[in-house]
Amino acid sequence: MTCAAGYTIASLIAYVSFWLIKKKKHILFIDMLLGIIIINLILWVRNPYGLFWLASFGILFLAILIKGSKKAIDNLVLLIASVLLVESVSTAYDIFIISLIQPHAAGDATNLSQLTAFIPAQGWGIFFFAQAIFFIIHGFKKGLFRLGEGEIQHNYRLEGTKEY
Image 1 (tube, helix red, strand yellow):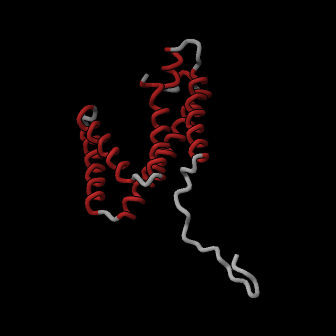
Image 2 (image 1 turned 30 degrees about the vertical axis):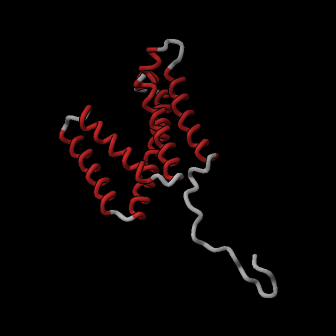
Image 3 (image 1 turned 180 degrees about the horizontal axis):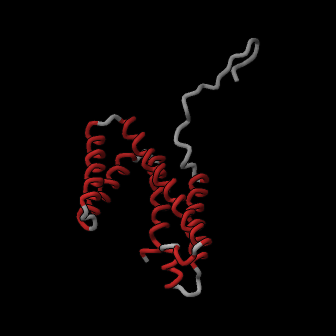
C-alpha cells in the first residue's frame, strides 16, 4: 500500500492545498503542515539532518502565523502549494520515464510490479503519471489555479463613446 499511495497522496495533497487556497483557508493549510511536521518528528525522523529541517520549517511556520502579515502568509502558502504541485507531477513523470527505460530500477513501480505479477512496472509508471495529470486537469476544471482577479481595470473611455 505504501508504494501505491506515495505518488497518489502527493498529487492529492497538492490538489487539496490549492483547494484550501481557493477557499481562503491559508491558516488551516499551515496548521496541517505543522501537524505533519509534528507527526514526523514524533514517529519517523531520527537523524539530525531531518530533525534540523523539520524544526526549522516548524519554527518558520509558527513565526509567520504569529508575526506574519496576511500577505506573507498568502505568499508562503502559495509557494508551498506550487512546490507540492510541481514535485507531484515531476516525480510521477520521472518514475514513468524510468519505468519505460529501466523497468527493473523504477523504485515503487518495480516493487508493485513484483507484488502484482499481471501489471508490469511500465503499467504502474503510466498509472502514477496519469493520476498526476488527472489532478492537474481536474484542478484547472475546478478553477483552482485562478487565484486572483488581478488589479487591472479594463474600463476605457473612448472619445464620443460609452465606457467599455
